[in-house]
Image 1 (spheres, rainbow, N blue to C red):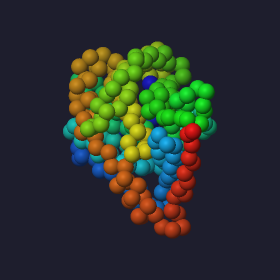
Image 2 (image 1 turned 45 degrees about the vertical axis):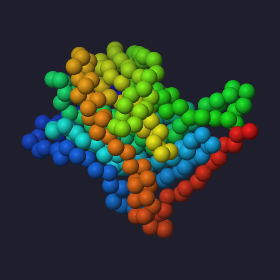
Image 3 (image 1 turned 180 degrees about the horizontal axis):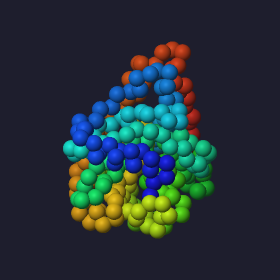
Length: 253
């Protein structure tokens, strides 16, 4: 199913076979080296603020969340380059991998990405809103699924993520040339101006028949700390490498 994330997923699965246990609680420190602090660009509209994280290619950034993983699960940060509608983008991601229901479960988190604004009124392009569901659906195809796969999705609905509610849908990916069939769901949310999209699935595809509850239980432990993350980034950056912060406002009548 995955594109460039496949390498890290394979690496994590190999690591799971080692007799080294993962501390189940992941933390959310900011990057240790201020010289590789990602660029942070807030874009504002009257409806919502869209903070964009612009990492360097290959940079590993802990996402601004905490999540409790079952024993034996592992996580890895990275970046993926996608040809988005607005151009070539480098997106930060974290993949969580572990055993579930006799197969392998995956939770892939993309975050800090730019929203594609849509007009709330087709006759007035200045009055725009953002739709996390549409962003999640767009990146499902652009960042995760091989172009040769057959991808099917259900209708939009609400999904819980930690103590929040996001928007998403279930999906199935079959007939891929290089990866096995799978199915799962995604949920997207804009939390304090920062976009998050969680993609949850398992391999082989029949694993999902009894894995939904276990995977949702992991998502239930998610807690967001966007403000803490931004404060740490700004506090630890030196004046010479402080991320450029700009704001673009879209006015409404």
